[in-house]
Length: 462
Length: 86
Image (cartoon, rainbow over all chains, first blue to last red; front, side, top):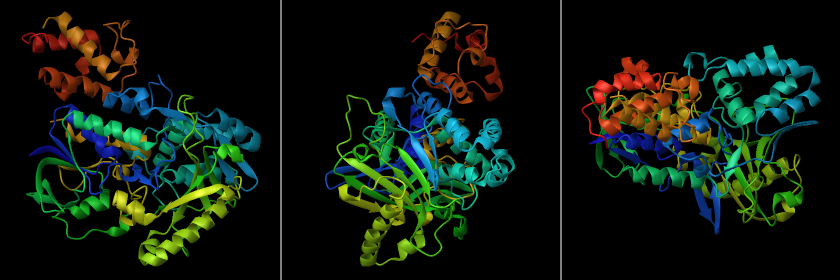
């Protein structure tokens, strides 16, 4: 009998597992895939290491900072700042036709950019900042509400509104078109007020630290152990049955599988409204270059581009991908320690919005062909905003909503989960709880904090 | 454990929870919150560590007693006086 069974060995599940095992609970983490990490996993292909979801660790604060999610999670998990070996970004850009806004870690660069490029909006931007700082992320009652409404009543230049929404929607908005104002504030703080960083060796460093700690505290981790159903008796969860027929008993269950996905597992529920699942899924086009991007004149860490004054955040309506907007990231363009040198290869990754239904319906041979076709289109779209690197590509890889589903098991390969968040992590069963994406936190640091806070609220108080 | 032992133990826990804090200048009569960057999650950790290390249960309605070092030691003295120092 386990004290807590955790479904999913992503960031949130591992973090929750560490908290519970640290306080002497008997904990087992079950992972359907053959590897850990969920969306933030990693893989090896053709002798090279790749990250799945990671462009940047958001919420970066420097060593010694005592406030903010990164400082909080280090204390809660008893890690040292150095354990995550985070190197800060060089600088990033929001690129629209004719206007670019650069930003770095902390607000300084962005404020100067807005003053220079949108001088009439300088004071309005300060009023927006005041609203964002006032937002209390621990009070879940003010999470909802339209971000577009708040922005429209604060900032009178629609182009600046779109340019602010672009990076924040890209990095964490599960809802199409608009964004919950609470989610906007969380993303604004994590990206524009705190910032981007990356460990030199990528996400595997963070995952390996989490797993090593979890195991050293006596936690059990079972890979290739998909949960077939959550067993329910007398209105309570009593354990899980695995795909391989094995059954495990637990006093409570903490699931990072997503809200719809978790409820569907419960044997007391016969019908689930799949419409609640998220729609926003992506392709990722990865190019390995014969030299570092800086030598090709590209020194930005992340570029969020959009090719018209209006930013459209929605599932593509008539094609496999939407070529109007994208995110370009170079893992080379971080301020790594001199002792680390540069990464072994130049890398440019580009994310596009994708229609998961269309991708998943493709027969195998067409799927391969469409990957090649959309890789080419994606790069062609991106080089309108950065130096053309196409003559330097020595290897490519592309992953699609199908890949994301394999790693996350989210319906539709929805990267940021369902639009309706379950902030308090509760479900219809008194001892079944949610952590991870559908509990309202996104990003690596957000996911870890999600696992910690749900473990604290629901699994440690008896 | 004597009140002095309990104080040492609380310091020990605080060092674990907030390794970057300088605890040398901690004023016993001033609230932790005013001297250290501790949030509600950290306060829960003091309670949890007491339970883990010494099997001392602090019920939720008593969390307010742990506001400062002085009040914490006063509150814990009767609960921990029969425990052996580790």
